[in-house]
Length: 346
Ligand SMILES: O=C(O)CCC(=O)C(=O)O
Ligand SMILES: [Fe+2]
Image (cartoon, rainbow, N blue to C red):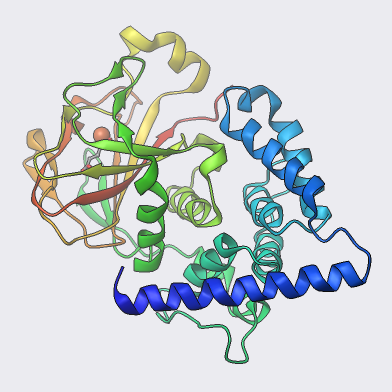
């Protein structure tokens, strides 16, 4: 982070702390809870469930706890509710409600919500980050965000007709890419391959964006990808951010699931028919995505996507799509990786 960015972050955090202090004082005067310790405990319990092993079976309880804390005015719970609202968790998906919640949470002192609003307002067609404090409230910032613009997808360019490989320029803004890098960085872990544990051929690290780690920006990514593919959101697997240091690589592999080894999984949750990669940075050398059987190497600029089909026209695995994430020779490579099934999991 540059010195200027750091100063801006510090100003933002100070403004939000002040905002929170004022709100707490106001609610004390009014004799309201205003995000008291019970609500804090509910929020924490809900988040612990979402992040724990019982998330799949107990998510409704977690969502109820977080919703209750949000309804009582807990700013972090309201920010989390925004993710439920845009995803449609336990309710209809509603982006406008999600933005309203982010603004409310930012006004209540959530730095997490305020930063997301700022990133969303850094629209790729009008690249400027709004500053609050000079007469602008978080509500003003929210009002300036157009979801129609935000969810529009640029025209793809064909790199290969068969197998189908498309490049989509600027599917994400630089601010969104930076956000995801920052969100993934502290959670990087050794990479895995499907049901085989840690893979020695995959020396890069990754961070999954499972339920507890999703935010409105990662949802924007997933929604744009679903729109670009014309696929229902439910077909998208857990998103990942991949990180490669110099010399680290994702060796040659295919992304489809082997029907011989994983027939039951395919029958239950569908085949992995499409892969979408979004290049999150460009300040590295080497590190292309390489398809040796097609004589194709590709590296997008920051925010560009690469989309390819892993199966042929009849839906059968297409070994020509074998590919590798090559190692950077200098710098670090960050990629958002999205595997997409042919149907929603059962
Ligand atoms: O990082 C890359 O270029 C390739 C990543 C990849 O193959 C994948 O995520 O399946
Ligand atoms: Fe892959």
